[in-house]
Image (cartoon, rainbow, N blue to C red; front, side):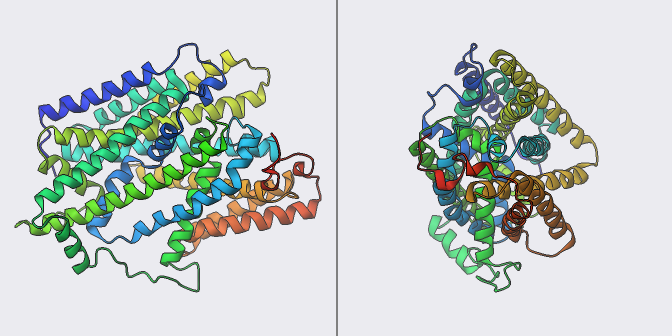
Length: 498
């Protein structure tokens, strides 16, 4: 399935990539070191950080597959977005006040202050391994889709996407990442809105026909029951709750997300970031699901056969084959935007976590200058490694095994969210109990994921319950003193002075 990517499209795409590189370098300060490199200089507006949160969560895989899944199927997965109504209040009410009071440098610093250094290092190492794998996949999968519709070789797409993001991430730190993420988030949303407007002009009957066709062909509905008393079976309620807890875990325990909150110590700004991110995430998901139904309506009105195949190719092929020259380049730039924002965030958060959660722990007297140099080196090395491995995936047949390994790392990393919850929501949980609870929950999570037919939307619920039950139970069993008994480290201390 090859599109018609013109010279004008190439010019627009490359001009956009160079513009992003220029912005990333322009906002950086060469003398930036230490906390300023990792947490910003306090000059970044909350709304920029909020859009960065949104851009980080929406990868190019999501950009392409949301519309494709809606085109090929129904809006069932849209209900997962309603989980934001669970995730946002949880983060705002229970966790962000604690993080603000403690003035953390990384997410996993909380695990050390609440429990011990072992859990901090475990959380950090799992995050780093997972992110390095995720960055390769973030470049590899969309590169295949874009190569199929534009004719640009997948390796060149990976290089364009990866090299530029690596340069400004390593040079400019969190400030460059946040501002470029903001621009790329705006490009992504604007591209989606423009694509929908063009689609509606192409469809006879416009938006009314999309609703009419979608209702007639049950595109907006799902056969999944609304509620099932057996909560491990698929239902709409399980979808909402499970997705909500998974998103909440990202908000409260993943370094790439928490790092954005830590750019300010103003709780009101943290809350506004979370609210705006929720609105953008729900709105954009709705936009792309509606684009999928509009694509279905458009192709149904054509005389030829309906396009089929992989979900991530449907929307990309429409962009290149149906839209005017130049417009295609702008929208493909939106896909690059989604990839670069996710990639630059991964690089910066990995460099921060490696430097502050591991090296700074091993060498407490490390200066800000050495720490910043190390972070830049790590960001560069990880960027090169991720690019190289994404290229290896293009030429080899190890992608399935690699995706399985990365999925396993993501599963285990998700359990850390339960450990954070144990720490924030209980006072008596101690280090030994938390560690044994984490190990026990990992065993349970691997078992239910690979040896049962339990719905994947139930995983986050089970992990949370098991983490708290085992972690608290082992804490009571071993009766080791909890740090929360002597310091303000939990939700119950949120209103106390810093």
